[in-house]
Length: 265
Ligand SMILES: NC(=O)C1=CN([C@@H]2O[C@H](COP(=O)(O)OP(=O)(O)OC[C@H]3O[C@@H](n4cnc5c(N)ncnc54)[C@H](OP(=O)(O)O)[C@@H]3O)[C@@H](O)[C@H]2O)C=CC1
Ligand SMILES: O=C(O)[C@@H]1CCC=N1
Image (cartoon, rainbow, N blue to C red; front, side, top):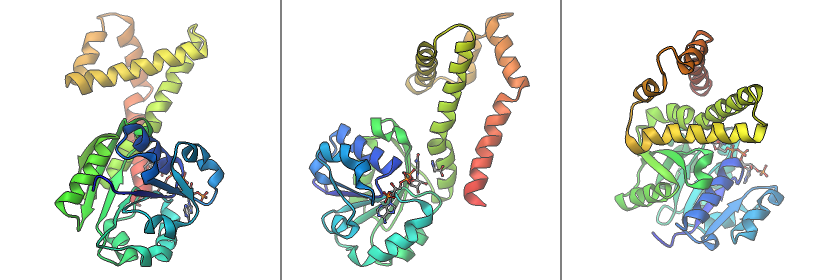
C-alpha cells in the first residue's frame, strides 16, 4: 500500500493540517495527495506544495485509494450519500476524522463493504505531533498496519475501543485548545509581572513543552515533578495553592466533562 494515493474530502482546519503533516513526514509525496473543498482559494498553499486541489469529490475518490473524510459532522451524511457509488471495496479504505459519527453509521451511509476507520487526531498533526486514537471495522491486517503507520508518521497512534472515541476527541483533539488557553493565560500573567507579550509567550510555551517532555521522555509522574519545584515556604506552592483555591484543577475537569456531554448528549 506504500504507493497509495490519498484523498482528503474536506480540506478545512483538520483536513489541511493532515495534508501538511503528510507532506512534512514524506510518508507520501505531495503528488499522491488530493484535497477537496468548495472554496479552493483556501487551499492554494497546498497546491503550491504540489498537492492536487479540487472541488470534484467524485474524481478525487476515483483517483485515490485512501479516502480521509474531514467534513463537519452535520454535513457528512449528505455529502457521503451523494458519493457512495464511487467507493470500491476492492480498492478503497475510508478513514473518518469526523466527531461523533459511529463506524456503523458510516457503514450504513456508504453501504458497500468498504473497510472503515475512525481516527481522532488533533491539529498538531500539521507538525507531526498529534496523538491519534484509532478504531476500525472490516479492515485487513495490512490495511490496519498501513493506517497505523500513516498516523505514526504524524505523531503517536493509540488503538482504542470505539466506545472511547468521544473521550479521545475531548482529551486529545479539544485538549490542544485547553493547553493553548493555559499558555495564553500564563502569557497574560507574565505580562502583568513585567515581560513583553512576545517574551512571555515564548517562556510560557517552552515551559509547557518542557513539562510535557518530562512526562513523555522520562516517564515521570506529574505530581512527583511538581514536588521538585515546590520549595517549602517558597513561591511555587503559594501560587499553586491559590490557583487550586480558585478552582484550577476543578475547572479543567468540569470543562472536560462539559465538552464530553456536548458530544454524547
Ligand atoms: N479542528 C479540529 O481540531 C478537529 C476536528 N475534528 C473533526 O474534523 C472534522 C472537520 O473539522 P474542521 O477541519 O475543524 O472543520 P472545517 O469546517 O474547517 O473543515 C470542513 C471542510 O469541509 C469542506 N466542505 C464542506 N462541504 C464540502 C463538500 N461538499 N465537499 C468537499 N468539502 C466540503 C469545507 O470547505 P468549503 O466550505 O470550502 O467546502 C470545510 O473546509 C469535523 O468533523 C470535526 O469534528 C476532529 C479532531 C480535531
Ligand atoms: O470542537 C469540535 O467540535 C471539534 C472536535 C474536536 C476538536 N474540534
